[in-house]
Image (cartoon, rainbow, N blue to C red):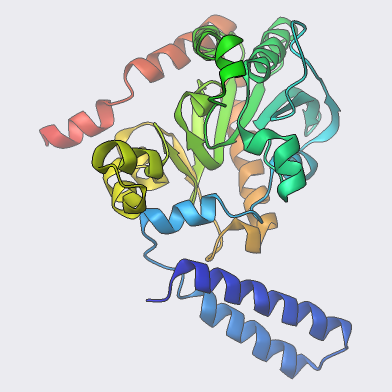
Length: 316
């Protein structure tokens, strides 16, 4: 079986050929041949391993938080700063409307190139980012706005300054405060979801994952280094960690899986945006019928009983 990296690169190359052919006014027959080659190549992207999915989850072409905001929401108004120290650009958040409904949107922010990644700290928030996120969540609760979060981070920033400014305290405060929010919280893991850095905006009433996203306590490289003192064993670690959407759905950690095109979302994001739109519409409609106290209780109960699905399966 071809490596997922080779399949991805070939799909990208064919996409470019199709664009160039369309610009040059190619015949329908020529375009049909290119599309047939594309479909045949995409068919090879099946039975992906956990490590294959990590490659796709980290792919630089994968849509970023601002892409989701542009595709799914209207009238987005960005809000900055934690009102204590500084603005952390690795968390993007603000107010928007979703089909006319006011919502608060928050997500980890990665870059598309080195310059952007340096600006956004490679999607690794400092304490100020998590405090900003919590500030926006508490504001949303005050005004009765549902909260939608998009998770895509290799983890919270582990630098000395972050620790000095209270990284662990900021994350733990988010976990505690989010568990009691009286407005619905819907979280979608779109790429990497690593460690407390992901969970700090992921204590939600409903948690979904994209098909090729991953969600885990740490990176496979970190896991392999701790277990075997050899980060090159990350592929083996990936399988042991049970970090794929299918694994986590079976364990009851997430509530649903959003499918992706073969080869990864970045090859046809519109299809995935449409499915996310349907998921958000369904979830917001469900929680609209609940009181604030009922919403908070449902979230608390969900996390208290997160392993029941797997336990029942083992009993059977």
